[in-house]
Amino acid sequence: MSSCCSNHATKIITGMCPQCGESCKSVEHKTLYHQVKFPENQAVFQETYYFCPAKDCSVGYFSSTGHIIAKQSLRTYQEIEDDKLCYCFDINTEQYLSALTANNAEPIKNFVIQKTKSGDCACEIKNPSGQCCLANFKMLEKNNLSSKSA
Image (cartoon, rainbow, N blue to C red):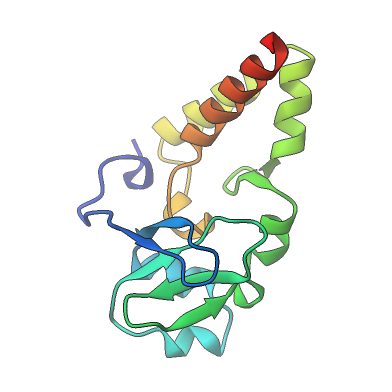
């Protein structure tokens, strides 16, 4: 299995976004260096950074000492705006929700699972959160199922 979707050596910690108050997970510096556009990536300090997943928040990353990197400074800014679900295999939330509605989402999820298991994903650098997207597939399935039963 790819190292991006297995247990990280780095312990994930949480912090509160200074703009929106969202609880945010820490990211590895590898993620930052690949996500932050030049020349801002040269100003990344050796400290703990967190990714803010709130779509309506302009903060992309913030550090424990108050350094802020705007979402517009990220290479994946447009993908974040477009609700990208899987950054490695270019699947957005709308596509997966449509597949769920049409009862043909299983092949999509199975493809991502298979590619993840074979080490063909790069979540730690392609996903701005540095996290594996498989939990997001499950969350969408759960939300879709609960909205159908409501």
